[in-house]
Length: 131
Picture (cartoon, helix red, strand yellow):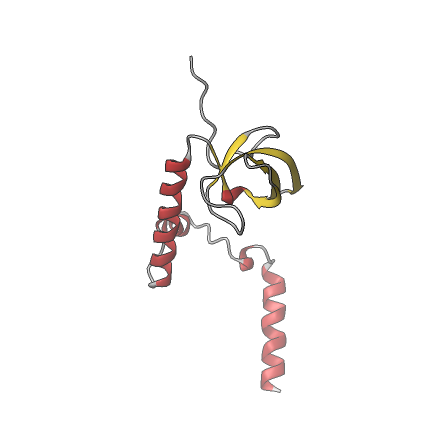
């Protein structure tokens, strides 16, 4: 039974074979390589990759790498991201944002700040401007 391919968001493991999904200076798109070192914290993870031509490049984002066999899925995801960004820039709401706002999850900073602190700030601004 064939193994299930991890999702595009699944972090890479040391020794995993990858392709450059997005070209960077000195390395073109589609160049094969192997993950040699993983460093970073939480959501900021970077990879050191030894490419088949012998060069080793560090500080590569997961967004710039893809597993072999997942390039088509990566391209579809990037096209969807570009379309969502274009829709947002044109003043339309992106489809994922529409779902979040309909569910009541605005995700703004005001959701994280207690109401009494917001009121205190509003009163201070009124005193400063009115004063």
